[in-house]
Image (cartoon, rainbow, N blue to C red; front, side):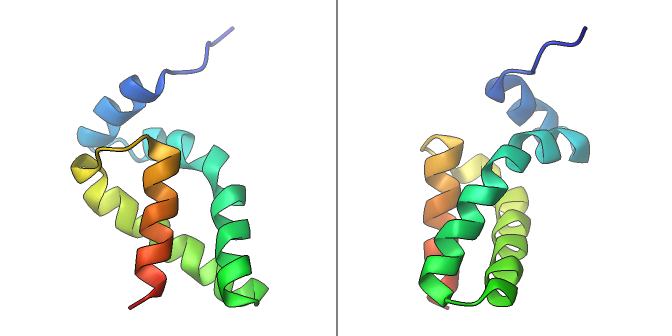
Length: 83
């Protein structure tokens, strides 16, 4: 049986270009990010687009974060919607 990878292990794998590690890291947060986007935007379709934008932005900039992954992903969501 496989044990769940630690977030720090996943971050190291993401740094190495492992897309599956990013999916494992981001997957559990997608629902929370969606709810946050939906509250801000009021539209399911717009919220889905915002989730994708947020996760793409997170993948490109994950290494600059200094907060925990969930905190940073929420911060990235909010700031990306202001553009």
